[in-house]
Image (cartoon, helix red, strand yellow):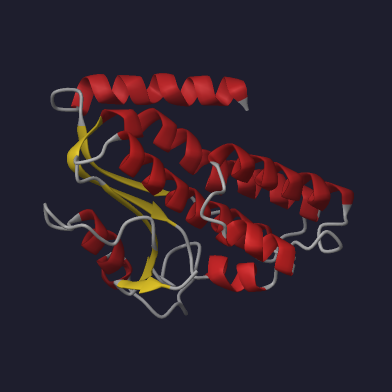
Length: 217
């Protein structure tokens, strides 16, 4: 993925030069979604493509943009309630790993890579992974958000930056279909709430938020 990452960083650099005031950003909202509903592609292929978009895309965007956040900035990574459901379907060992607050970004990336390899080999469930590529990638986004929040707290103490993951809910879009329970305006409520947390707020930070409520992980 190195070449793709290089292109992404260069693209963000052009964006920054054109639109960022004083070389800084106040708000980032990162979202990626490929669920492969009713897909016919082999599961290993689904896992690789979904991971590239949902997890690696979020990671690369944050690597490019987090360094130029201004004080009191807000970051919202769009995850899903499916991440919690998928975590519950992991083996006890994987559940403990993903709940470990000392898990590093490097270790998380290795785990996401291991899932894709296991999916391609056809033994991901035997290794304790849930049988969902989308859900596993959203586990990654939720845990990544916790890790990124910890790093921001350690590297930029006093800057008041808040970073969270959120679930917008089941929203009526071209991808989710007309039977979803929320309209676009309702789906935007939680992301906008997190993006507009007032200056001086201390929390939520590093949390998974759904319906403007912090979820237990």
